[in-house]
Length: 194
Image (cartoon, rainbow, N blue to C red; front, top):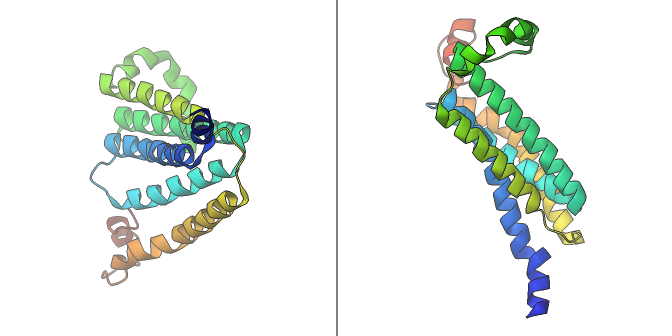
């Protein structure tokens, strides 16, 4: 019985559960942003699935401590970005650009009244995302990866990179036959513009 517990602690089942949890955590960030920003577009989720698989494979390439650090940094930086974008969009009705950070000090005086625009569901989602990230850090398998595991992760990374290269051409293929797609107005209305 003890031998079975030792095998399951760092075995393939734990690695599979960890991989699914991490990919779902990365996808959850995108779903959070889509819910609060533009929930009618489905095409960007195709890119998010590929990115989630890519980031999960990168995290699983590292040994346990490295995997925990890489997942923690990636997840919580992306979570901060998702919260900032979704919150900014809820308040101002537009996406935040890097040039908008220049004016952050001017709005700091009105922070309390600005945060009243955000719903309770927004704050509950933030707490849930933090909990998902903490559980994801805890789930990283404790054993060293074998060579075939690393080869599998490397193959997944190559396939995901190829998917990220090919996917825009496939998604935006509908724009090729669009009349006037070369001018700025038509490009803004096309799938590429969204």
